Image 1 (cartoon, rainbow, N blue to C red):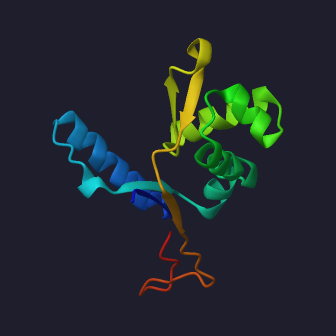
Image 2 (image 1 turned 90 degrees about the vertical axis):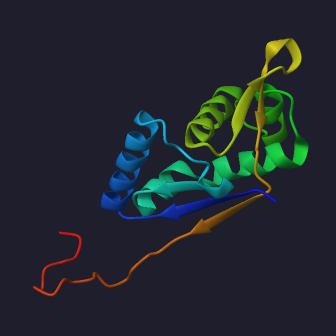
Amino acid sequence: MTTLHITVGDREQLRDETLRFVQAAEADDVTDRDGKAVLQFGSYDDLVDSLTPLRLDLVRAVVEHDPESMRETARIVDRDVSDVHSDLKHLEVLGVLELEAGGPGGAMQPIVPFDRIEIHIDYPLVEEFGSDGTPASA
């Protein structure tokens, strides 16, 4: 079973991890990360803005119906083709799904390479403070 792990981390941690990844890529030292697919957002708001209920419905529809094109996907979810196209492209950029050529007439076919999505949210209700009394995020 292939699982996409979606997490919310602080922006500084996300920036540091991205820098390390880019440096490793430039040094041609990128590993598969043990086959674990991870999508990390810098904040809860970023997650909610990117993975809207409509976009998550699209992902489920693609998995359940295996549409051959973006147009067929739009018909399945009963939405405007241009809106579905925009949402599928956004999901592709995030790595939640892939758009592959090869549908009817060369149409782009949406494919979800995961069996499951797990969303892990750390949503602190109280701001943590450092030993000097300043917020830890400052």
